[in-house]
Amino acid sequence: MNHIEVSKDLVQFIQESPSMFHSNQSIAKRLEEAGYTYLSESSTWQLEKDGHYYTKRNDSSIIAFQIGSDLSDYHFQMSAAHGDSPTFKIKSVPELEGPAEYLRLNVEAYGGMIDSTWFDRPLSIAGRVLVEEGNKAVSKLLYIDKDLLIIPNVAIHFNRKINSGYDYNRQVDLLPLFSAGELKKGDFDKMIAEELGVDPDQILARDLFLVNRQAPSIWGYKDEFVSSPKLDNLQCSYSTLMGFLAGDNPKAVNVYCNFDNEEVGSNTKQGAMSTFLADTLKRINAALGFDLDQYHQAVAKSFLISADNAHAAHPNHIEKTDDQNRTFMNQGIVIKEAANQKYTTDAFSQAVFKRICKKAQVPVQNFANRSDTPGGSTLGNLSNTQVSVHALDIGLAQLAMHSTYETAGSKDTLYMIEALTTYFNSNIEIEAADYAQMD
Image 1 (cartoon, rainbow, N blue to C red):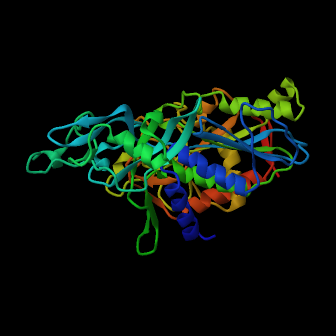
Image 2: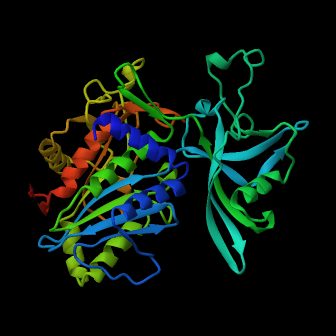
């Protein structure tokens, strides 16, 4: 596929993924279409060389792995991304009555979004609902494919300071309008029950989030840009997955990870700081007949690419980025580094990745924050608290990170796929931090 076809497939993937539970389902579907076998964490794993498998945790994080056919250089070559994005979560008691006949939903922030971007857009809800079926509590996915809600701005006539900067109160200003009189308290669960084909009394609990319904767009006179909700970080979830599916390393075990909860710190049972990756690698090791010492040897020779989108230099505010270590859309994969180790990139891991990109003929660029501006964190150093390996943080340059509608370059997704395909098709032999050889 060319970069426009890849961008079209990316936005299709994003539209299939209105919540982290749906992105997990979308990834699992693509894995199964490629011949991967699902393994429950609660079952015994029977693994074979040259086998293709995946497992899930909480239905919102997923790890897939390809076992090499001979494992003559037994180690793990891994990628990690995350499938969650900043949004608003609906509280357990969701409805707020009034004033007058209005009915609003009570929501709280999930992650660090740009509040102003959520106003005056068509919204819906998506996530999972736990329903009672006999003596079971059963999880069901929900996405209401309809313009359902809106968060209305206050008219400029009542807020003359709106264009001079305004401090939004999330308990006051950011509550979505659900009805102006047609619906009453209790109708929220009735709506969910109707969508799921159950009785309202069967609803036990919900993890439901607001979804921006604005359609993605590939735009510009030369189709240079792609804009969409959730580019951070479904662009990396998608591109690392496509590279993983195209890869084949007979000497090692290739591993694809897509974690939940990065936007709220990753310290959950299904986040990058959880035991999910370590548990999976240890179970692979045991099922293949290796002992604990062989596991530690394999980890010492392993490598992780952490992929989470990066900041493009802003056309109106170039001063926000470092004079030399700034990045641009459509100019290649971004290697992210920070002296405070919020990014896990060091000289060793950067050198390995640059050789991968050279082999793939993919351009790279470097990002570092201004020295007077603290940056955010991502997956690499967090996952390394559980599985310590050589690792680096990369991403694709984008504008308006954490807006509900973000913009990236239409060429960069393909660059990431090509680099990750080369990575997963190459065998990287590592000796401590002394050298790395790539076949």
